Every structure is written in structure tokens, then in C-alpha cells.
Length: 409
Ligand code: C5P
Image 1 (cartoon, rainbow, N blue to C red):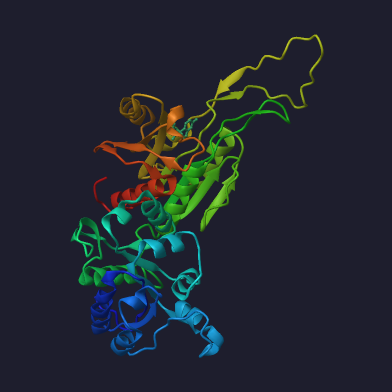
Image 2 (cartoon, helix red, strand yellow; image 1 turned 180 degrees about the horizontal axis):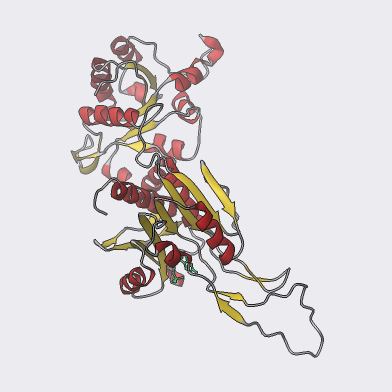
């Protein structure tokens, strides 16, 4: 691959591995890239602006409040005019600032002002790397589409052994090439040209015009899945019950209330290559909802609700036929015997995969940010670690893309 004509903004933070950025600039330039460097205050303790300027043959950005050129705005332009922002080394501190949107120096401002792909190459001490704060910050970045290369494992500058070494320079170059191949005009996203249907949220089943039967589903997992599929290039229709969430970017949202409306909206969205049913559909609806508000009459017995079973949307979409999506997935919310219940559900619903999640009270899954799932499909059982709902969504989207491309999973 070549990087001819590509403009890379290399952000160098304050870690011992900063010296490797000198070699990185040479390797990127050998492949035809133009490299401009931005140095944090910490980074300047390890490499000098002079070396960076000499190797890149470009001025180096250092000071946010420099008024020497363009009234201090050239860094914003540099960020916009780049094809990719590469952060190498990315320290725990800079990763934390990126995750939380801080812009208190030039490097963090460039990164916040950018609408271009960002690739981070973390480098730090093993304990800092393993710290839950660092891992959580990286998870936030990944959920926003920030790409990551490394770190590697081995002897660290501090004398300790373990993860945290900056990825090898040539691995960083390869990651830059891949990132640029997948971004911008002409890029091929793995789900480009594919249609996806996702259900999310609860359904509300009316008792009368003001009352309903509902449930506590937040819709977070389903919305995250819709967003993740869209990021991989799919044309996504999200059929959602009432939720208090913003619409995911780049997704067509169809709002419904009842299970019957959800089914109709799903059928209207077909054909699709993939369907993921993450909605918590009410199992029953009131057979004959009152047309007017049912009044409470003192002394009279409370009304009795007669219920009818709702259609099973996942089973309906999974039924064999010309309109069946190639890949249909659903969820199994269980409090015990996760895998056995998931296998039984896979067979009963006729779908291709079930994500079984633990919704026992101690798990915090319902309404929470994290989810622990087991993926059950015809090809096997895979236990995923505890992940944010966004990460579960990204993994699932990657699996679906790999499968549609003809791979296993
Ligand atoms: O049958 P159960 O509710 O346990 O199955 C859960 C899975 O089935 C979820 O993926 C849910 O979205 C889907 N489902 C559905 N329509 C229903 C009930 C469940 O799509 N009526």
C-alpha cells in the first residue's frame, strides 16, 4: 500500500517512546505521506521540535496560544486538512483528555477539533495500562470510532515487564494504511450496500387511552447495535418503542408503541440482510383496550384485563421464506442457566444467533451501561467479557459483517 498524497497529523505526547516518533515520521514519508507534528509539553521533554521539523520538513505545532501565524487558527485548519490524526505515543493522560473532551493544550484541542479518523498508539507503564480508568477511557474512544494499534508486550522503559509498549513502528504504519483505506471517499466499509433492521426499547400495550402495560427496557443495547451497524456502512432501520435516547447517527428511526406496530414496521422495512431483535416486546396485550378512559367508581370492583399473546417478532422474521434476512439475531434475558436457555431459544425462534445476557438483579444490566453476554449460535458458544453496551454492539456488528462476508461466527 502507498500513502502518496495522504496528510497525517502526528500528535506526540510525553512518554519515553516519543523518540520512536522520529523513525515513524521517516517511514510514513517514505511511503509518500506528508507528516505534520504537534508536540505536547510533555512530549517536548523527550523530542525536540527541531528534530521533528527537520525530519518532517514542516513546521511543528506546539503552542495553543501562539499568534505567530494565522491568528492562532492554523492548528484548527491543520486538523481539518489532515486525512488522519495519529497519536503516537498516546499517554494515559492524553487518552483520558480525549475521552472526556478536554482541550486545554494544543494537542487535545487539535483532537477535539477534528472530524477525521483518529488512530491512537498507546504507550505507558503496565499498571497504568491495566488501570480500569485507562481501559474505560479507551473503551469510550473505541465506541466513538477511534482506532487503536497496540500496545505490545515486553520489557518497558520503566524496567517492568508487560503490556504498554508502543506498537512497533511498522505496525503503526500498517495500521495507518488500513485506517486510510477504510476511510474517506472510495473506502469500502464491510456492511456498505447491506440493509439492517434493528428493534429496540419496550413496547407499550394500551389499557385505555391513558394507561398502558410496559416494561423497563431503556433501549440502550438496541440503539447501540443500530449505531454500530451504521458505522460499518449498513443502511439501518431502527424500529423503536418509547425510549429517552437520542437517535443513533446515520440511522432511519421508526417510532412505534405496540408490538403489533413493531411487527408491521419491521415487515415494512424488509428486505434486509440482517435483523437484530433487541426490543423487550410485551408478551401480552390487552385484548380489547377501552376507547375511553376507564373511570374508577367508588365501591365498584376493579376492572379485569383480558390478555392476548403478542406476535413474536423475532420468530416471525426468522421463519423460512424469501424475505428472511440472511442473519437474524435475538437476545435472551435470563437470571440463571444462561446457555441452556439460549440454546433452547435459538431452536424455538429459528434465528441464527442469540446473545444471552444475565439480567439478575446483581448484574445491573437493565438500564445500566454494561452488559455481560454469551453468544450462542449454530457454530458454538462464546463467552464475552463484561463490556459496555456500545462495545457489545461493535463486536456483534463485526461478527455480522464477517459472517455476511462468508466467514465463520
Ligand atoms: O421470548 P423471549 O421474550 O424470551 O425472547 C427474547 C427475544 O425475542 C428478544 O430478542 C426479543 O427482542 C425477541 N422478541 C420478539 N417479539 C416478541 C418477544 C420477544 O421479537 N414478542
